[in-house]
Amino acid sequence: MLEDISKAFTRIRRNVDKVVAKSNRSLNEITLIAVSKQQQKDRVDASLATGHRVFGENRVQEAQKRWSIRKYDYPDLRLHLIGPLQSNKAADAVRLFDVIHTIDRPKIAIAVAKEAAQQNKYIQCFIQVNTGDEPQKSGISPCDLSNFVDFCQKEVGLPIIGLMCIPPVDEEAAIHFGFLNTLASRNNLTGLSMGMSGDYEEAIRFGATHIRVGSALFGSRE
Image (cartoon, rainbow, N blue to C red; front, side, top):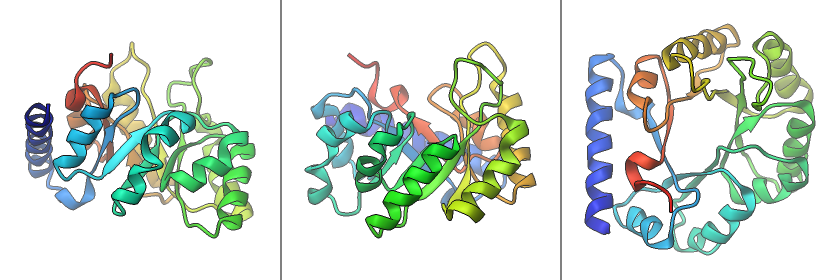
């Protein structure tokens, strides 16, 4: 198991190195988030044994079971919430995670800011943008983004470091990566959380700073 996981991490890092070099970017600009949601214990422990310390989870409760104890064993661990957040889970999310990628409405922004203040914790945040305006998908509409950025930063005091998107499955991802990059520039944001196992190389070419890779590292979920 350890050998397989180690080889997968090496392969992904080599691919990232190549794309970064061709794009005239710095490797230090790219954060590889290993998406550990629904992965078994041995796979997670094997990935930790490789030295990797940045992981992404979709659900707060599942993440608590997986990481609460491991956080004490690995003090340099960095946990990213990449799935939707409900306001009643804000306290737990702020306590466990270091970065939240899915701020998408005022209620969530207020809840996270309130909990961060109460816990005296600095937590970095991305705003999730629904670049395809899909009714079934979370995320702020692009036309509402500028006002929402102002609300988060100026009224709520939330540290917004960038934007996140999940492109529609039936559309060219590059179009949405380019669009998110443009939106970030318009709003003076530098962070871009975009790109998954099947398209992270394309995302890097369009300026991704955080890529969320799951199956390419861990294999299919059981």
